[in-house]
Image (tube, rainbow, N blue to C red; front, side):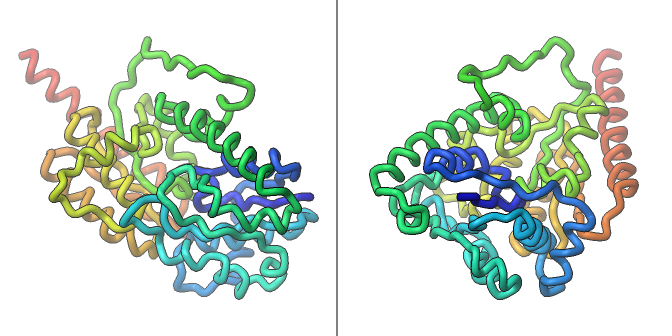
Length: 333
């Protein structure tokens, strides 16, 4: 049996878990192609224009999978993975959104409801519908979930050791020890690059912003590199947190990095038309002003040009480096 995974949305966060789970259950996992202009255009053609770019991209990946002779496309409904926190309504209604937009996909959809209190989503009740579809026993599913949970924890450990998600994914293959990160040549400046995983790690959407920054001698910290308990503990008991799970993680990371003084500035990568980001982005901007740290928003859509993004990033980095050197000269004078 061939099960397709769209290379979009929270794929970048949960791919190691899903791949391990389905392979443990005897299925072959098929991934959609890397995001491209033609793939996005296919998604745009079938999606209502008012919706955000990540959903248009997701539909493009679903269409791409339909050409790969798959039996099912896995499209989970993400509701909640922690108490009093929820996912964006588009995630909650994603199976219906896809089935009414792409009729053929509706006939091949494999979905489960992710609703619990574990970030790894591996509560047994979440994946119970897979037993009937994949013709496996409850015992087989529970065993596969335990293996997938262990594999995902290893992946997250790599992330929190300072690796990007792409590097962590590669490190998981055939390794059982955390790789050592060299500090022999420290970067000139450190920036927090914050945004949802599907904006940061989709190389077409972010135009490889992490790689571009590293080429400019910048150390990059993303929210997935942070210990989630540390992020949560940054908020006092009386502090009102955000309702959306990943928005809360991003904002918590910004507060944590600013308080610790580890960074020289923040970059927020967001997609045009994102409702939660209209709140999250403004809060991070205000926090940056309070700590007197530079802040820049990179808002992308299907029309954003690479040269435009490259110019803005280079100018932002150059400004911070100049300020840092000026401050160091004044301190030594």
